[in-house]
Every structure is written in C-alpha cells, then in structure tokens.
Image (tube, helix red, strand yellow):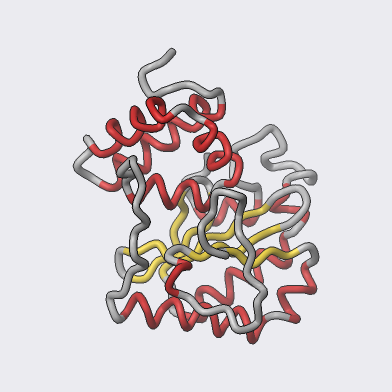
Length: 206
C-alpha cells in the first residue's frame, strides 16, 4: 500500500494489480476525488494517508477518509453517530455498520452539486472534534481497538470479512492489537493482517 498521500491521486492505493494503471479506481474518479480533497483541506483538516487512502484528521483524531472503488467513490465519516443528516444523503457502508457514515458518489459531477452539503458536514465534524466530543461506544462482546474500528469503517471488504470470522478469530485480532502500546503499531499490524482476515484466518493461523 502507498505511504505518500500524493501517490493516491496519481497512482492509486496500491492494494491491487490495477495500481498505477488507467483502470485504477483512483484514476477513473480522479476529478471528483481531487475535489473532495480540496474540500477537506479547505475545511481545516490535516491530511495523511492510512490504509492506503487519504485520511483527514483534526488533532489526533481520524475524521474522514476518501475511498475509490470500481462502481463509486466515497467520503466516509468517523464518529458518524454524533452527526445529523438533515438531507438524508448519508448511507451505511454495509449491513454491519451501525450508523449512516458515508457519502457515496457515482459521478464526478455529484461532488460539485453537493459541495454545500459536503462542506456543512465537514464543518459539523470539526465542531465535534474541537469540542472533544466522541460517539458513544456500542456494547459488544469484543473490545476492539479504535484503529481496527476505523479500518473496518474505511474498508468495506475488510469489514465484511472480519464480521464473517468466528468470535474466537475476531478476539485473536483484538487481543493482538490491544497488546500494542502505540497507535501507529496497531495501524501497521492491521495492514499486515488484512490478507489473513480476507482469507478467513485468525491472527495466529498460518
């Protein structure tokens, strides 16, 4: 996966064989993706790259992430449970997502049309971050680290595969990641674990 955010907008995320080709999703939706990037930067977010995608932060908090897929591209909000949706335009990433947390686009022109709404939602997200507000955590049997929750929110394929794992395999990843003291270490481990999760294996399985 890429480690330089500029590579995403010129080559892609680096997670498949279409990387740095005209068929890469980041190239197909390049105009709309770049517009989303400018809106995030104009809103006052700090830009970085996580899980192979542009991630926008406020302080030390992940706020929104940009993703590109074959059929659409997306702007996904972390801590979406806090946010209002007066226009009813946000969607859930999948059946296991608790709150509508993404804006999904199927054309570059949609971003231009929705610019006022997007900007308003970005400003709302910043206001919650600056106030130190966080969404209440749901009660689950497995205490998952925040980095894993963020990774699942930003990667529908990974989320589907993780939720299909047995509870024991899910716990093996949570236990392994919770054992890391640094957030950066947990993020690195998640990236390394991705192929195993997709394959339906636990953290200790070969």
